[in-house]
Length: 111
Picture (tube, rainbow, N blue to C red):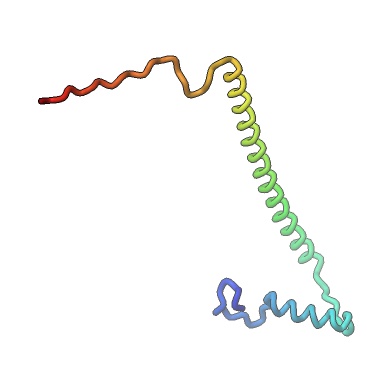
């Protein structure tokens, strides 16, 4: 309850993570004796599986797009470095020019 998004909400009839852990600990300590099977209707199971597959597919697509973007950026950097190497080999260095710098005029001292 303390770690939930809204600790003041009414959780009557709801099963939180802590309660589920306590139930499962008891189940495993008893080795499943006197356990009651849960029967899930086929349409509910199908709906749950469909929702899970949809979420999983979206997550896979998101991760794949992140990976593609990362590879694209890496390829751009490699291409830029290769262009820089070629220009450097040709004697052209980026950021330099053959123009002479203007000299600043000196101010005359006033007497």
